Length: 204
Image 1 (cartoon, rainbow, N blue to C red):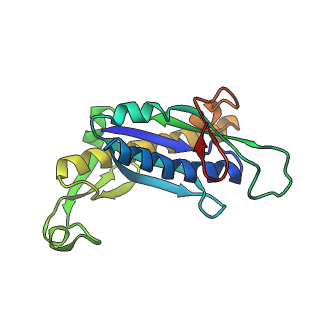
Image 2 (cartoon, rainbow, N blue to C red):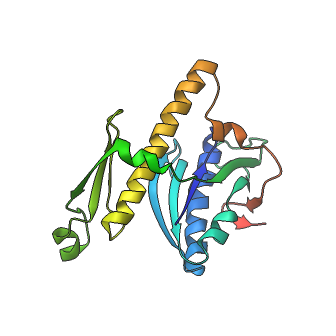
């Protein structure tokens, strides 16, 4: 399993729209490549259809190759759909591969098997494959039921807690230094690995 984070990198609403469009395009590319994409976590942007970030898992033989195409600085070249006549046309956002957490984190987390909920019929209602994980020290809790096995859901739960702990640590560091999240700082305004054009988000 490959985990990929798409982020607007603290950019304006146009960058958030770019992330939303990028997610849709990535999902289309994943279908063509027979790669399964699950959205583990996403943060909505201010503009309708925009996303500040999306955390995705990719599974399949071509998952790594697909994720690599989205790793680095990305650019959407389009007149602003939010500010008529605005001179800027290049909107930068980023994708980064997420490093799995250290195995030692498991010892700091309490796991509980729970009944899956939501659509899915009889299988969902009668299996205890969902996992609720709680980080003991911080109280951070997540429930994961996107996978069919407890083991897979446990692995994703650990990753989500790791991401939230990392975000909290980086937020504290940012407040101390009056700086931004490490990943957001590292998105370079230029030299994109991929560029997309127009409202149809066509690859250039």
